[in-house]
Length: 121
Image (cartoon, rainbow, N blue to C red; front, side, top):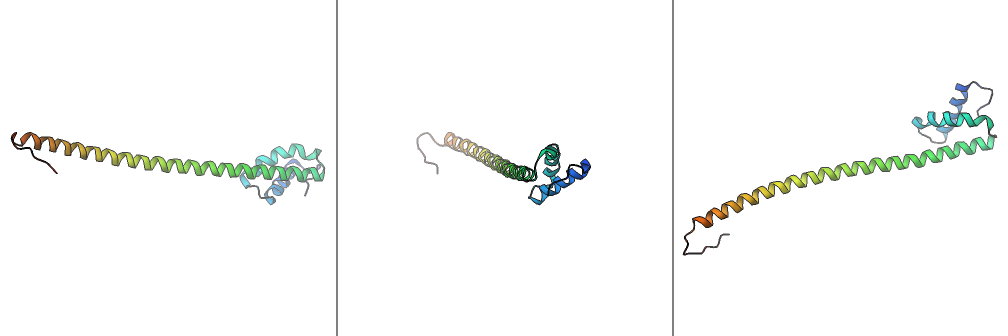
């Protein structure tokens, strides 16, 4: 339904928001898009008005999909960072354990009699 040119600005904008919402545009985006379309609306034929609404709804839908994909990527990146931090902590612990074992082996070798070579397991 086309908003009427003689309606007060608030009613025209509310009608545009309603028309956008009917096309599936998220409530948060309706107000911003309605403000922009409100300036064009008086110059548009009913068909052009419907086409502008449809185009705005499609563009907002694509933008919403991209925004969701970006949010998903950020969540995945944070999870990978968390996993890498945990892996790094485990590697640090393993390195400390290996250093302790190396020091123990070195001490055992230094205490062994010179004449008898020993294999340590």
